[in-house]
Each structure stands twice: as structure tokens, then as C-alpha cells.
Length: 87
Image (cartoon, rainbow, N blue to C red; front, side, top):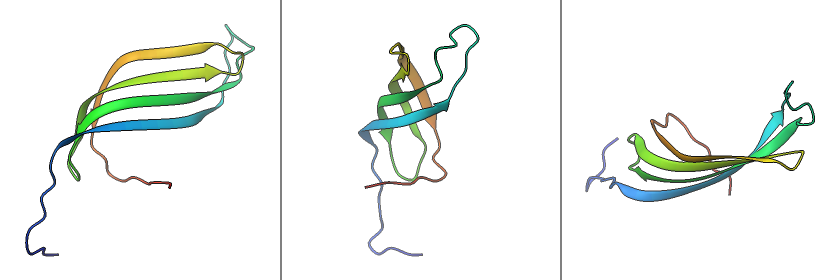
């Protein structure tokens, strides 16, 4: 495929927000926890279609018993092979 004029992808700062279901969980230490939801907030540098990162992410897991687990200052980078977007 040719583009005329050419196409340029510029690096830029991006914010990512995601929510998901943890599915069925089990813990011998905390048997009352059987599932939960996760919320991810991230900031990263990205340029399509190149690798992304480094980035910063904060993940919060809300367990079904009312407790929470928070992961602070998680750094990440990666290479997106495929993606889907729900709008």
C-alpha cells in the first residue's frame, strides 16, 4: 500500500482507562473473597503502530468482600500486536 503524501505517526502522551471483571477467585487465606473488579488508570507515550511505553499505571482491585488492593507506580512497556475498541 502506498500513501501520497506519506503518513507520519507522531509520539504523544496518552491516557488509558480500563475496567474489568477478575472472574472467579479463591484464596485459602481469605476464603470470603470469590471475585472482584479491576480498574486501571495509565499514562504512557505511544506512537501507532510502534511499541508503547514506558508508562505509569495504577491498578485498583475491588474484591467482593469490600476490601481493596491498590498497585501504585507500576511501570510497563509493550508492543501491541492487535487491539479492539468498544464504543
